[in-house]
Length: 321
Image 1 (cartoon, rainbow, N blue to C red):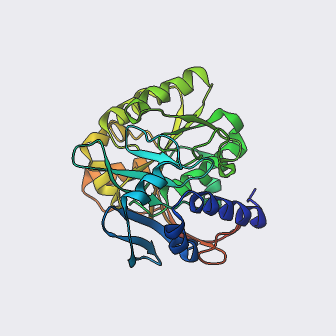
Image 2 (spheres, helix red, strand yellow):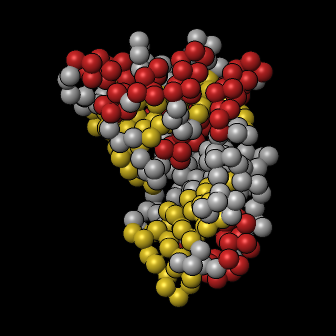
């Protein structure tokens, strides 16, 4: 079931307001007119504010970030975790701290602006209901976490609370005690320390009766090996960084995800949000091992209605390959 469009629009605006309300007034005034298209903002001590929107960085020479800006902003949100990240209660926005040379001070912040695009994974529903095991791949800012959130919602339509999100950076379900509604009926576990992600995977299976574990950002050998080990007890859906499936399969630290046989049923490449290339991962691994080109099972295009302003229903076009 898709999320009603009016509910999505209300939620998106509420998420924007939560970010704007904690920014220094003058920085918020620059971001507000472009926030519907904005992807990221950079606050650097002694340098002009930068905001990326419409795919381009804009520098605001009339607003140089001061220590007062940084101090005021830092006082308006909760603690920063060991990976130098923080979230905003109930949203998917991400704040990344830029430490100073001594590691103690703060020279700036990166703000990643998240949006609740309802229905962007609806076109994948037949595949997810056949097997919810999917590895979602793409570069930063291309929508992996956005798609993962909607994938979790769709999986939970069938499996309900047996789906648990291990939310390491709180970008999928948000940073507050009440999770973002975009995850539907899925459950959520926080990861207090990034290095403990693999331990939390075990905990959600042992203590939360999770049959399906959803993970954002699988990056390390320890995490890959933990997924391999725990795959006899639960099904996994996850994201990882990369734009080339061959290189991802050949990536040394992630070898446990692909050998001796893949942990995941599907691989989804996201060159851009709404553009999906779906692969049978076992077939892809065999092709890579044989030195053969990869062939996608299908390509999909999910257009979010209203352009940059998301709505609940995504228009989808599929192309069999």
